Image 1 (cartoon, rainbow, N blue to C red):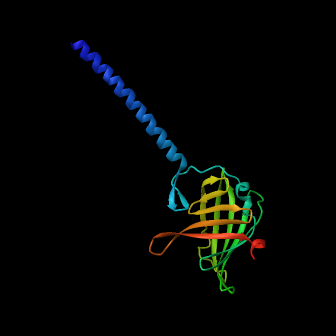
Image 2 (cartoon, rainbow, N blue to C red):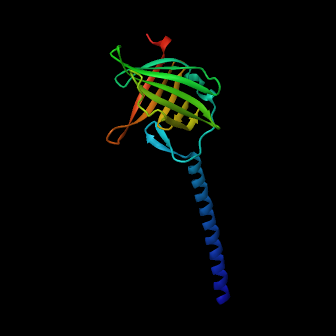
Image 3 (cartoon, helix red, strand yellow):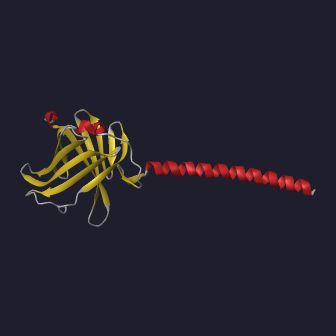
Amino acid sequence: MKTLNLITSRSSYHIKSTHMNKVLVLASMIAISIAGHSQEKETENTLKLTGTTRPKATIEDIAWLAGHWKGNALGGVAEEIWSPPQANSMMGSYRLIKNDTLIIFYEIVTITEDGPSLTLKLKHFNKDLTGWEEKSEVREFKLVKKEKNKLWFEGMTFELIDENSFQVYLAIQKKDGDVIEERFPYKKVNQIK
């Protein structure tokens, strides 16, 4: 009887041990998968980077952005002008206009290849070109996720709708700390009637 109990105990231990190994392997695979994505939702259409893993991308992945674009956003007319890719980068300018006569602010923006991925950097300026950020400070948005016609930078998503329109989703932190999402729908200037 003791021998049978020992065999049964060993068999039970082997089954439990094998099951535990499978559970540990599965848990490790899930953890690696989550760490590999290194992202979490910030707003409905934006993400934030939660680790160091970033998707591979080149400037050609967002080359469709080159051109002159306008759309209604933030209570006025938003305008962006982007250069074609050159030297692994694109440069852009932005302005917000209210009532067709009042400049609210400007931005100077770059998207550059940053190792195997992309980074968007920008600086804000008042209408008199005094800066919002300190002289050496720049806002930086690292690429978090990439699909064919959609790129998620930290807190900012660019989505190509068709060759004549795209939209940007931007996570904006309010003074009270809440984060809201603003949508910027753009059309190519030659497509605006």
